[in-house]
Every structure is written in C-alpha cells, then in structure tokens.
Image (cartoon, rainbow, N blue to C red; front, side, top):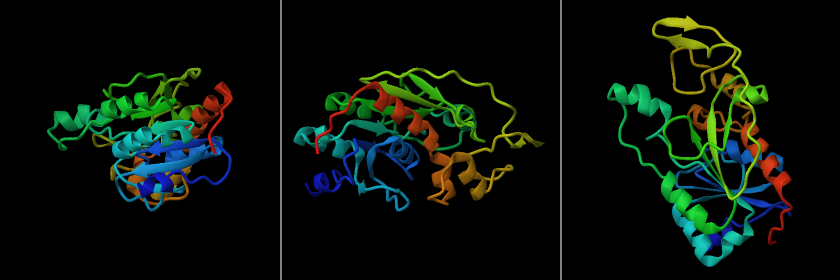
Length: 242
C-alpha cells in the first residue's frame, strides 16, 4: 500500500514515533523537541499538522503496519483516541443536562492493536472515566504554563517516574454561574464565558503553528509530551531500523 511508504519517511536518524489521532500536533511537537522523528495518522484533514502526515483511519493503518512488519521501523507509538464519550465534561455537565450526542470510544481497540504491535506506547486521555491506567497525570502547573489542562497517560511496555502534582495557584479565569472569576489560568475549552482569545490560548499552551481555536482547545501542550519523550529516551538505549 502506498501509505506504508508515505508514513515511514524520516528526516534524519532520530528514533521514529508514530502519532495516532494527532489533531493539530500538540503532542507531536513535544516528541519532536525531545528528539523523535514524528509521523502522524488521522482520518480527518490536518493541514496545520507540523510534520509528515497520512490521512487515513488510524486503526487500519496501525493494523497494516503490524501485518506488514513495517511497524518495526518505529521506536514507539503515541495515541490520543477520541475521548468525548468519557471525558469529564461529557459524563458531568453535558450528560446531566441532556446535551451532546453519542460518541465513539476507541480506547480499547487502539490498546489491543498497540499491544499486538510489540512496541512501547503511550495512550493519552483527559480527566474523566476513560478506562486507561493513569501511569502519569500531567498538569500545566508542572511546566509553568497558564493553563491547567490535566491529562492522563497510560504507558504500555515501559515505565516512567510519576511527577508530583503541584498545587494550583488560583482559579481558571472566566464566568461561572453568572459570576466572573479572575485567576492565573485561562480556560482552554469552548467559547464564550470569558474564554481567552486565540493569542492567549497559543501563549498558554505553547503552540504557535495553528490559530484555529478548535485545534487549540483539543491540543496537548507540547511540554507534556516533551517530558514523556525525554523520559522514554532516558529509559533505554534505542536501536531503530533505518
């Protein structure tokens, strides 16, 4: 299949990381900064993704890479499968109010293929009821960011130290139940209610290659995946096929 050639392109001799469901590439940029050559796969068009990218179904592509043996060209896989069904906003306010629709949960089928790949992997999900191990929970306060954005990470086939969660310094800025609260953090989700401008979101997340609000509100701050990527590279000596 032609995409097997397309998505294995590399710019140099860095270890390769396959980035599944990448959106605009927040995680990808962090892994790149940590020292990986990153290639993304997403079923949606991602014109702002900053690295080589293949448009296709992530599960199909991963299955084909495994069956062809091409998966061995990669050192690790990161996956951020769609999570709206189990995120805190859906299982909390939205569901209690009867808002929103039906969302597909791709965490389990993604993990099944990742286990079959034999590669170390990372599965990322927001706070909520998604059924992943919370091997790492990262927060913007750990990295001096002006956004909280808790994210949980399951580490498959490897381990990393769990960083201590730092106390938050105040509230998230914005309107809550008719009252405006000020604070050191911006609300990196939704619209209205005192939400930050696009420029404020970019600065808070450490993302400057997209100005699309929807992409920014879904993105992982690159600082998170840079931390994970450096921990992974420090945990082992990698030998990646050229």
